Image 1: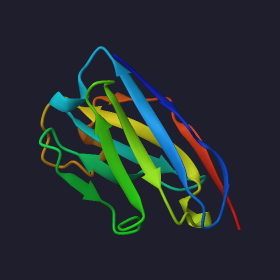
Image 2: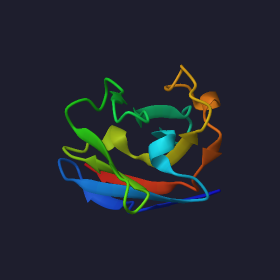
Image 3: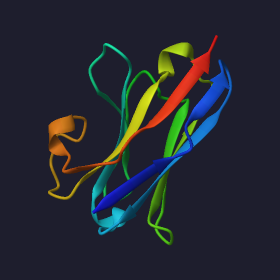
Image 4: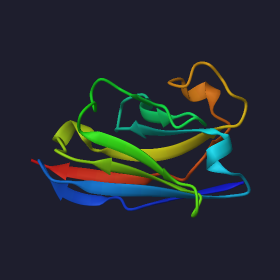
Length: 123
């Protein structure tokens, strides 16, 4: 299984950015897929997660600004980030849970992780 994240970069506060994660070796539509992020000196935290059904969970800090989508034809998920704030700066990781864990906001529920992509937000 490989998860390849891409799309990170530098953006000004208030701007938008889309990061993506492509999978090989598994099918996103059969798993729970999540985006986590980790800023320097902080713990890894969930940003958003999408269940097999397509229902989503969003952390309170990103509700109304971030949207996760899934492209089944390309086996890719995207995270559209709008109205970015300096506190959104972090390394963003995609992760996959193949075991239908209940605790989808918990990092330990996830079995596979991408390598991370850096998002920098300038103020």
